[in-house]
Amino acid sequence: ETMIKIGNSCFSNCSALSDITLPDKNIEIGSNAFNGTGYYSDKSNWTGGFLYIGNYLIKVDSTISGAYVIRNGTTAIASSAFYNITGMTSVTIPDSVNSVSQGAFYNCTSLIDIHIPNSVTGIYRSAFSCCYNLEHVYWEATEVAPIFRPSDCLLILIQSVHMLFIDALNCIP
Image 1 (cartoon, rainbow, N blue to C red):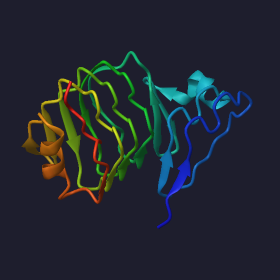
Image 2: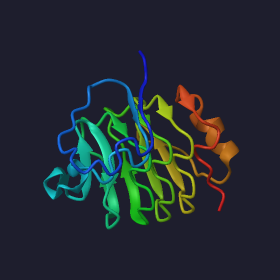
Image 3: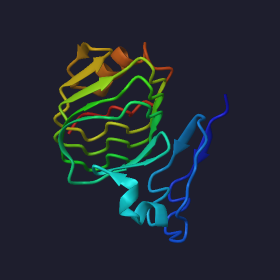
């Protein structure tokens, strides 16, 4: 299946853009692709601090903290969706998700645990970079390893992920 990509800042600051519909296909959504749009700015589109467009998790409010379970039915996590969410300690990704985009969890400095289902077939560049307190990655409810070096991450995860960029789990402070 062909990957559709919406580039970084593609619709950024298109303030009149208030209605967005995305197809249920394999889409990679770039960082800040919809920031500053009418859709992004409309508080009624945010639920509990989370902005979705259809089944795509686009952005998370910076005040989110503690453990978070991404809603069932989500198919992809956009680039930088959780960027700099420093209060989140754990995230569980549902089995409906197939990709974690570039820098999706970048600099989530309090993140300790990640729960990733086998449905995830793509983890993109720097997806979990600068998550300095990351200790455990759980793959289908089985702890696979504490993360200390990028090479450890690759050896464990490469067997289950069809596409994993080399520095997706750059975990050294």
